[in-house]
Structures are given as structure tokens and as C-alpha cells.
Length: 336
Length: 293
Image (cartoon, rainbow over all chains, first blue to last red; front, side):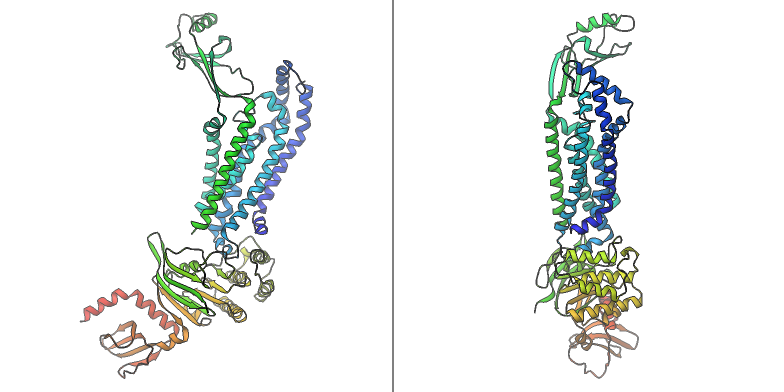
């Protein structure tokens, strides 16, 4: 069974491995450049208050380099991997056999359907875990200093490309593909639906699932007018929107709103004699101070990174296991 | 001796369509059995139920005394259109069989591949229909099953390939003694190799039994026109009437001694066709008879 699975799977595995090697090579080649810039900018081994400035220098220096391409490219790659694995590895695995009728030949060998599917699921998932695991491990170490300097590894853009969750997403993508192929029985349909489901999962994760897993902290504090990042206002009606800078370094800020004295989101109206084109910025600041405004911030601190990683990984492992069991049950009980 | 295939009131429905309706059969082991019937009669359904690819809606089915389950080493199956992996070579198919079957007979497999002239290095997707059927038969036979089920294995083959395939099948059964159930919608294909026959028309078993007994027990009667009376000691399978003459196909174990009938022998194809026509025209026949009274 292992031989057959490998024989049918080898083109995909070799293609995937070749792509992986390309990405890994890019990461390894740029390793020297990243650590070189980290030390030349003074960020590596910095201490205390000097770090903030050094981080800025480090990140600025990275902008113009090839490492920047690797950085952006790998983020994009790890977003695409779960869908690609599901669509090109997972979905055809069973659907192609059902479509071409070869399942009737293979089921009449002395191997039970359950074992047949288990070999496909097991070997496929193992290949996915090994490949993506290696990539994520290397990338997490490579980008360690960049993530630290930017303080954004818990944000939705970076989070799915670091640590454990890429492995979880890729394995889930694969099993989603296999299961949909088994249920839908048409390769192309299964591929399309897999793409939608995996993309849906990736969109739902930061919007719904991760906030729930991360248990964000909510704080309310009096607005410090100097923290204002921007003021938008309608000069006719006096309606205004205040944007506040996040003061928490390395956190994932989910919500950051200015509340009025009544506890509702502050939208003005502004006193047009004090704020607006005819009044000075100073008077407007004074007026805002008198409004008893509060900032409500909901955020996940950067220190929770590994906690959230483990929780999300656990959830994805549970999803993968559940779908595998569903597929194994389906092939025994529901198929034709 | 256990039966190769036993069914009791076996029924299979796909949604609202009934593919097999209360079939009761008992096929003894050690025979080459032909399963014949028109397209859509339920032949494939019966064979797929027998190898465990399908589950019955109602009733019971046993192959070799066991409930069928896919993955059984005792039952081999060659599906309709003889599916093989287009991307794998002939040799890789044998390797697949060797990996997946503990009872694999590599000598038999290689000898058969050489006998039918298949190139082991050729991809199965490039084989002709006849070659593909031979490959599928080889994989199924080298598993050394006690019962081999073949679903229309020769339907897509030209006459020469048919003959070669059937010859190969006969050699296999002669040397291994396995039971074979093989379906076809053409009696001519089955006549040469089968010693047992099941006629399946319209989801129901019309007759099943030994070919020689079937040949001995069916007669064509030609005589002056008359309504068909009950209790003549025979079953009327099919009847046709002209203005002056009636022609009946009847089943009777006793010899027909009524001198007003001219009794002719029937060959297998005639018998099967009579059952097909009889089953198809069942309702219509009664109406015709009523009109004549």
C-alpha cells in the first residue's frame, strides 16, 4: 500500500519538494544578509532604550534588500500553501480514483477501503507536515530578529506564517481536499470547493477564531490628546473621527476606539468655533481635552504569541483528525 | 459444498429506481456461470453487491458463505470497462497486485502477461481495449481468488480479442478450479465458456440453472392456432400467434407428447431471448389474450 501510494503521489511530492528547496535556498542565502544588517544597525544585542531606534534603522536598512523579497515572498507562500496542498495534493487523491473507476479495481484487491484511505491520508499528511514544518521552522528562526524589531509577529499578516500553525493549516488543507474529493467524487469540483473552503478558513481564522482563542484584553483609559494619530472631520456637520496610535508594542490590536463621555463611540459633533478650518489646531486640542474622551483598546499582547499558536494548532489538529475520521467512516459506509 | 453465490430476496435501490428486485439465487461453486440480460437489467449491480462494492437495500447476499466485503482475498472482481491506472505500466500493475495481495501468484501473472503478448514496460493508458481487459483479468486472477466476478469484460472488445480473452479465461479456470461469474448482454459470448446460466431481466431473475438442463428442459412448440390453456404441465415463456399458427417457447421437464405440437429443440440464445421477450411483453401479452376471447 505504501508503495502504491508513493507511486501515485510521487509527481506531486517531487514538485512540492522542488518548490520547497527553492524557497529554503532563498531563505538560507539571505540569512547572512539579515544577520549582517542586524549587527551593523546595532539591533542585534542592543539593550534598553537604544533598541527602539536600532530596530527602526534595521528595518529601514532591510527595505532595499533582496531579503525583503524573501520576507514578503515567504509570507505570501505560507498563505498559499494550505490551499495549494488541498487543491493539488488532497482533492485529486480520491476523486481521481472515483472518477476514473479505478477504485473498483483497487477495492477488489485484498486491502480494505479503510486501510487504503488511511495509507493515502497518513503518507500525504506526513509529507505535508515534514515539508511545511521544515519551512516554518527555518523561517521562524530566520525572521526572528525582523519580527522582534517590527513587533508584529502576532498580527494576522505574520502569525499564520510562523511557528506551528502553518503545519496545522497545511495538514488541514490536505485533509479538507481528500474529504471533499471523496464526498463530491469529481476532481475539478473538489478542487474548486477545496480552494473556497480553505480560503474561507483562512479568512475566518483572524476574524472569528483567533480572537476567541486569544482572549484579548480590553482596557479603557482617558484619551491623551497628544496620542492622536489623526482627526477626520466633516466641516459642514462637525462630525468627527479620531484615530489613536496604539501605545502597546508588539500587540495585535483588534479594536481601538475613542469613546465619548456617554460611553458610545465618539463621532462629534465638534464645536466648529473651536475645531475646524477657522480655528487653530491648538484650540481644537483644548476643546477635545474638555470632552472627557476615553480610549477603549482591545488587544492581544505579543507575549501571548506561543499560547495562541498552540491553541490554534490544537484546533487545526482536531479539525484534521475529525475530517480524517469522517473520511474513513464515509469510505466504509457511504461510498457507492 | 458451499455456494459460490447465494442471495435471498436481494434488493438494491438507487434512490427511487430499483436496480435489483427480490432476487433469490443459489449458484454452486466450481462452475463458470454466465449472467445474462439486457442492458440495465441489474447485472452490474448484482456483481458489485457480490464483491462488496455496494451494500444491499434489503435481503441477504453471501459469497463463498460469507457476507461480501471489499478487500476480501477470496473474491476477485474485474469491473465494467476494465479500469486500470493509465499512468502505471503493465509491470507496475503486477507490482501493485503483489503488494496488495498476500496470496499473489507472481509466476502466473508473469506467464499470462507474456502469453497475451503485453509489454511490461508499456503504460496501461496506451493499451488497446483488449489488452487492458487482459491486464485487468491477469491482476484479478493472479490474486488467486476462489471466486472471480467479471462484469462485461468483453463488451468493448472486437471479435478476435473476445475470443482470445475467453480462451484465456477458460485456461485459467481449467487450471485453478476457481468459480467464475461473468456477465454479458450477449449469449454468444457466454455460451462457449459457461456451464451455468442466470438470466436477469428487468431487475428480476427469470431463470437460473445448469446449461445442459436448461437446453433439455426448453422446447419450441409449433402447431395450429389455439389459446394457451392452463395446466398443460409446462410453463409458457413466450408465445406468438399468426392467423393459423401458434408458436410457444415452454419449459417442461417432462417430454412433450401432445402430437398436435411439433416440438423443436432450442439453443441457449433462443431460450435467453424468449425469457427477455417474455419478461418485456408480460403485461402486453395478457391484453392480447383478452382481446381474442
